[in-house]
Length: 374
Length: 155
Image: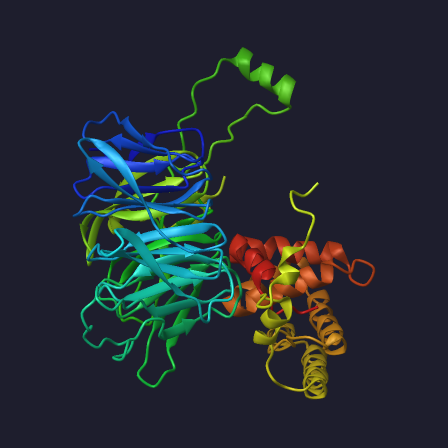
């Protein structure tokens, strides 16, 4: 597979995407009420199933890598857990009990719970209720003041990070009695009943927090907001966390992940994934773009056609394409291959309808910012 | 026409208000205290300017800007202090002056440029735009986005 591996699936924005465990299937939402399942085992990706139970735009998709269940959530305030029976995907309703759109969903690492973020200023932590044979939920409400835009699970299956439109990133306990065993103490605390607030961070520069991510060890939290900054928060035992903020010269980031304990990849409105690095956990800095920004070789146009465009448009050059591979905002970015503490490949989905699978290769970083511009 | 004509948020007793956001941005100092700090800084800046030390005057003027509500006087005075310094620069000296600022100072300067541009009757927009052009080259679009998102406004 050549890197980056570009697949133009649709002309519409891709609001969410998720690969299955062995990367042979891909679920995407092309900005409508359906979820298309692609077969990605050959180089030509084809739709093999469509999940059609939502009646508003689907905002989040996550496939559990081991149990192969798909969870989807939508602006219609519902979430479904889809299981494949005899080749057909069957939905199971989830009792989210929210009165606003659901915005984001992720399975927990053990795949026995999932969390749905919503505009109802709440996170629904969902678990399977054996007695009633449905997915029930418990709400994390306090102290969220606005729409929750993203969530990320701690590797211990109990802690949950959230980023919300009240400009704060938070770490909660999502401990469910009967599902979870008592967790071992972490840097975030040792007593963890449900809805314990283990940390609350902000960059101070305002802006919705679009994305949050725990580091591979789970001891550090990174978040990015609409202020074009990347923030890395280190919790302290005395309750005063250290938050390192890197102000960047580019447009805001909508998605980020940790490639390993000292490298973060972020992407968003600038259409290219960019790399942030540290050597000692204090000097976080912007390193460069992972998109090579190759200037396209201009196709040799005839003199006649050049005069024609000069006459009709007033310029000889009508190239409006960006130098980046994605031609519009990158909405979601997820690790594709490698382990949690050493990601080797990742995938991006954008408003331009492309899914791109990239090799994570820091040696090919483009440091020159000017190459990013039009 | 909007889909819904009733403001449903008024029935929400737990609504997230603008007030709540702005309180977060306040320093906890009184308006008089901040105003006297602004006055003192204006004097310092003027002294630096009379000694011809315009780069130091610029960094001094961008220190500790007054943020928060009910500070109209202090904010108006501080904008004037900053813009008076900017006026002293020849256009060829602007790029070096900007390179001497750190990222935080560049963001504060961007805030003041936008604040001043919103009052074209009071400040010379041509001069402000040439600063804006040079500053964007260094600080990028990120700095402009931060002016828009930051609730700690300077006017």
